[in-house]
Image (spheres, rainbow, N blue to C red):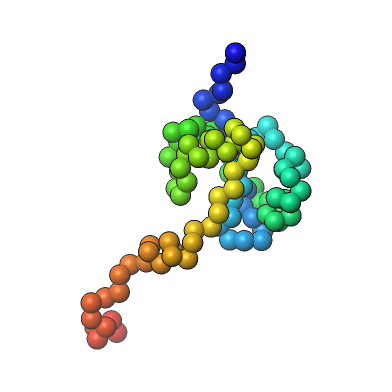
Length: 102
């Protein structure tokens, strides 16, 4: 019985249709192999970077095990843009007093 590899060369692409929408696929795959609906929804894929994916790789917004599992099961992973609430929570708090900001 073959064991699954513990690292996988990945290519990451950004969407031409939506900011902060990314697609990750194994480098051995082709974008044309993806489902047609996914390609239409994603728009033109613009290559961003290549990297080695492992189940323990530190990632900015995603759980690496979730990414790894999707790559193994579906052959791709879509990273959705952060929700507006998440963007707001990243903002610094307002100043305590507004009379001293100018």
